[in-house]
Structures are given as structure tokens and as C-alpha cells.
Length: 117
Image (cartoon, rainbow, N blue to C red; front, side, top):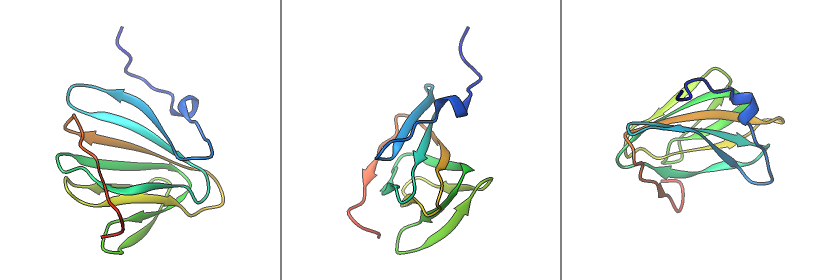
């Protein structure tokens, strides 16, 4: 039987660098879980062909929206980066920061930004 239920707590993984844990991928969408220790970050990037929704499960982060715009994000919030919009995240809390990203359509293109633009 195809897996349809995922225990995210069991999937968490932390290290000395940000951890991107695959949850699932279908022919239409994918989901990953980001696990960040304090001060770790997900680099600024865009997906020119896909929307990316981030759902915060634990902790406090600073969401970067490009052009120097940021917003403080915490547990139970969600953020949307439409195709082509710059986005990134940094753990600004004292504890761990965990969020799930769901993106579509696949395959997802990732363009890393050199600086905040």
C-alpha cells in the first residue's frame, strides 16, 4: 500500500548545517521538512516554475522576501512564495526551527540568489 501518512517528528534531523528532509514526491507536488538549529538558514532562492508554501511547525524564524524585506515568522504560520518570488529563512530563536515546504508543479527549478535582491 502506498504511504499516505507521515510522522514528521520521527523524520526530524538536525546537524551542524541546515537539514532538508524529503517527505514525499509525486508527479504533481513535493514536500520537504527543513530542520534548522539556531542561526542556521535556508539560502535566498527562487523557483521560476513553481509555488512554494512553507508551514511553520516549531520555533521562530526571519522570512526573507527579497529587496531587504523580512517578516518574523513563528509556529502555526504559513508563508507563500509564488513562482519567481525570492524567499529564504533564518532561525532567529534560541531553540530549533522546523517547517514543511510544499511546492508544485514538479520538477522544481531552484535558482540561488547571490545576495538579497
